[in-house]
Length: 248
Image (cartoon, rainbow, N blue to C red; front, top):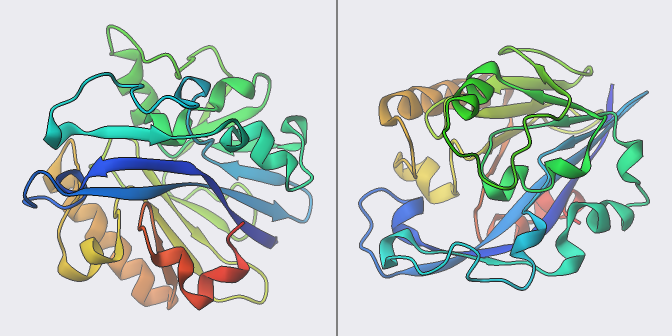
């Protein structure tokens, strides 16, 4: 049973809003939060995503000079590294039983390399896409202990993995059913913000058709479960009263 859910802030990133909202004019820069999620079951401790890589610490120019519409500027301090964030929760890296790898982008998989020997659950389509890359980014180590998972897998009771391709081929969202709490749907980067959800506008996608189908599926799940929906990078959502009990 899922006993506890913690939303862990792993730093921030400046990004051009046109990457969050398809069709938005270039030049509007927004500061977005980076999240990971700590899930405590009866007999297991799971981490969903691992934040940004160490190379982003104090380095807003991690991606070098970028065109305005492509702007990505990490705002990360040493205290935002996954080991330090977990330590503030009283958790050591070796306490984590499984890491859920929602997708391979720097702000979600950046700390994965610290989990040698830990099972890392990833969708096979994401790993296949990575293996096809001629040059992998420095935060991806395919020598880790990856275990492939399929849509609908429940690694522990109360945690369900949902394959939501579009943003990346093997992107995964999650449905959480914590004990005594309304179900929670983590869209991750299938839906960046509440604005995307309410206006039915996609954010950055490698395949817009798949992305739109994934959003439609998430809407159906949210309605069927009467779930509270938490978006991947909404600048304001964590300030809402319902989420205060979960954010750390």
